[in-house]
Structures are given as C-alpha cells and as structure tokens.
Image (cartoon, rainbow, N blue to C red; front, top):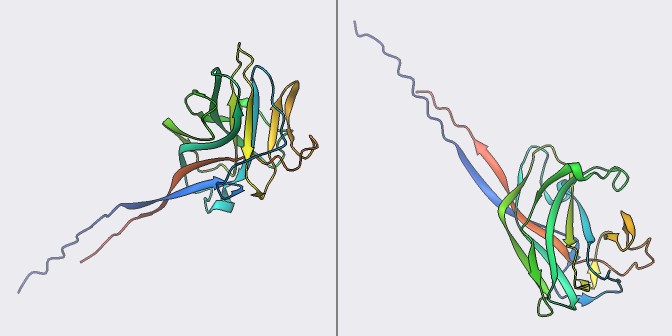
Length: 204
C-alpha cells in the first residue's frame, strides 16, 4: 500500500504599496498677496487643519510626511527663519490645543525676498500614528533680533479656514475672526500612506 504523504506548504507573501498623498486646502499653486498683517521680529504662527479621512487616510493607516509647502508674498530681511510643526488635534480645536500633542517637526531654514514658494524636506520624516484623525500643520516664524517682516501668501481659491497666532495673540484664531476672510494661507504637506499588506497562505 502506498503511503499517503500530506505536504503542507505555507507561503507567506508580505507586500505593500505606498501612495503619495498631498494635504492642502488651496486650489492651484498660483500664489497671490493676501490681506494679512505680519509681526515685526517674528515669533508668529500660520496654520491649517486637516481631517485625514477627507484625503483617504483611515485611522488604520500611518501617514508619513516628507515635505512641507508654504508660500510667501514678501520677506523684508535676511533673518527670517521658518519651520513646520505637526500636531494631533481633535474636533474641539483650538480650545483643546496643546503643544504636548506635537507629533514631529521639520528643520528650521532661512528664507529671503527671493523665496515665494518654499518646499521644505523633512530630514526625519514625521510619522502620523494610525489612530490620529486630525492634524494641525503649523508654520512657525522664529524670533528675529533684526525685526524681520514676513508676509504669508495664498491662492485665489481655497476651501477651509486659516489659523493665526502671534502679535500679542496667544491662542489660535481664524482669519475670519481677524476680519480678514480673504487671508487663506498656502500651506500643505506631502507624504505617503501604506495602501495594503497582503498575507497569502497556500495549502497543497
């Protein structure tokens, strides 16, 4: 009698596919001067909020940010330095905002009067954890001893609020509440999300 041998081959195939995702509320990339004041000496903050699900990023996916994008319509001196900060926020922002919820930051770079659209590479990509539903993308102008003046730019069309902090305002406020409803900032980030991880088990 022939013996029956059962051979079980388990083949595990782990595959993943990354997709680039750009977060922005601006329509197009044609920058314009917007009716937004600036603060002498810096230490001011421009920001946009993003609901990740609106961009196809679920709470079961990590989102890795590699680049930040921001536009400027004017820079008065050489001593204007900016950087990006990424925070987790919730639906009660700005009342619930806390700097303890910082996820990560970009390097600080200097900008000048020749810089209109700045694309800043994150030396260490910022990984937004799976559970996060909303983030704040903040562009901070560092304090300047030379009283640097820096004006942020926008686009003609836009689809959400812009947020400001600085010039004696310790909390975030919308540009609408600053009586500048047309001051919509060109701020965004680009990163990748993992589309899938497939586990294939084959029995023979």
